[in-house]
Image (tube, rainbow, N blue to C red; front, side, top):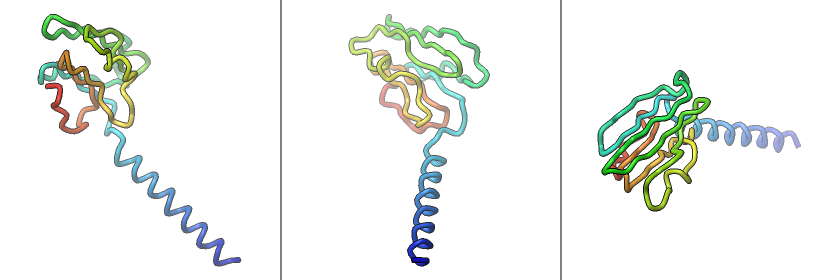
Length: 119
């Protein structure tokens, strides 16, 4: 009985350590985001210090309205056919960027990898 308890405790510690390691590895390094349009970085913003506001980004005669609210960032309006960027919602702590391919827009955490598909 004592061996089973020790094995169960060791297994739990192993699983928790693995989960914490994965979380620490995949989360963004900070709250600094980049807004990239047409392959050029337009803004670098620290969401922890940024006031609530709207940013309008235009590309090819179409625009995206980006909102910052309460330390979160998302696309509120988009002049593109599918509105996938709007459906993505707020930029996630998991590091998955917001992308609008037709308008060549990327919103991502700085240091979030090389995602140049929209550029």
